[in-house]
Image (cartoon, rainbow, N blue to C red; front, side, top):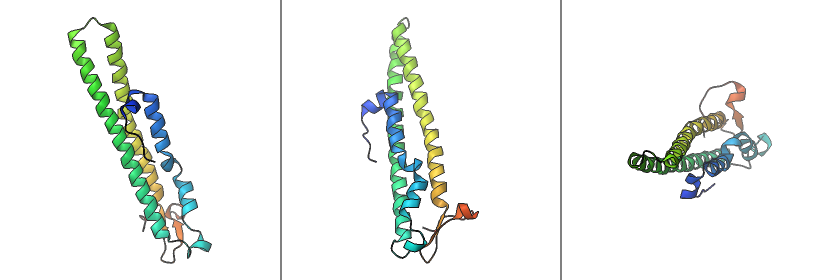
Length: 155
């Protein structure tokens, strides 16, 4: 999913989280995606399993890169806001409203930074599922995970 990279998404943390939730749909549905796009034994000759697997791989890479870019962009924007607020706080140390705003932005920044850790977990899970496949020379797709194998994917 292509996502807007606007400033508004970074200003509102709930909107930021919702955007990431929507963008993580491909990762949340990876098993379903594999089950519906890769052929069963009866359709192995009609669908190029290797090509389908490669397309799914590319979709995952693009989704992961897009989300990482948005997260890092929002972290940079929010870091800049925190920096400005700290500078203003130095000039007006008695301003309670400014202190409250600074604390809110610092909290938002920490939450955004934690999204990088969440992103790493989501990505690792998706890659493990994707790599748990094996496409045989006859075009049959087998799940290495269900067979107990630990071999990397051959697509």
